[in-house]
Image (tube, rainbow, N blue to C red; front, side):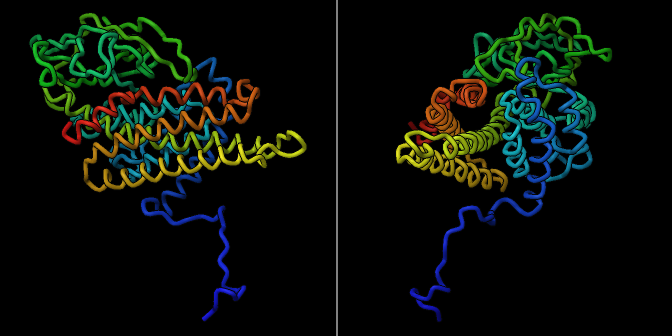
Length: 404
């Protein structure tokens, strides 16, 4: 047996070595390699252009052709039949696009709109929306937030009142990603305005007719200008006596709050994955700068102050990643760990923002300039502490889970 002083037995750390993983198989890693390559070749080169023009619909159709939108959906609807972990791989691969707005638009389609249609939809709804959605031929949006109701979902005022074989929808939604371009929307409405949670029902509603024109009564009342996520179109939508057939109900009448609460759990985990991946991309770019930029005769990365910043960022990011992974394993294996999902989303989104701030600081004046693109990442990631549940809502969910 070799001794500790025997040079042949000395184990040296290999920080660049690959590692086996408890949730990702070789198939997951093969997909990661393929999708990352596509993102870097076909999305990343356009990241600056799309800040002014929005990501093009053709990009989502291309993703659908390659199967990247349907990774976790059944093959019978055009999906790839993969497990939930493929959603995390997809979110991490999209971080290489260099465009938070593009990532957001794609995530809405694959991780927010299509999953509830798959889980709750009738066969007719799946044929009409899920199948073309997975191909990228129809783009969807999710309508929850209103000018007067966001975190308090039960306080929404958009109504869908039964009238014979139809429902008549009136109200407005705001901050709707993909809204201005969407072909359809998963819409949260009040079917009983006198109730709170028990009065909510989900609908899947066409926003455009077969000619591509908006349906009667629906308008995009405003395209919103944002601090970040400029590549993503975000709108305020208005519904005035929009008539939909009774079979537009998604799931059960009066159960919409519980349906959307389930949807939010998967959305928050994917958001957490996008956050730790985004933090990694920012660190990579900043690390490259720290190794090249010299001050006082040596690279700035050699200074303890900078080296320690990287150590802190890397440690926090890895903690967020592993927390997300372990929680995703429980979720994928049939558990419903709402407390931990909420914690993972809260922590990862905060760490992502901390890393963005530290990266800007390390780059100094260059970090504030568009040329190095960290300033865009800084603006883009801030939305993560608001979307899919604000920090304050996350904290309240966690606190209540302890009986407080």
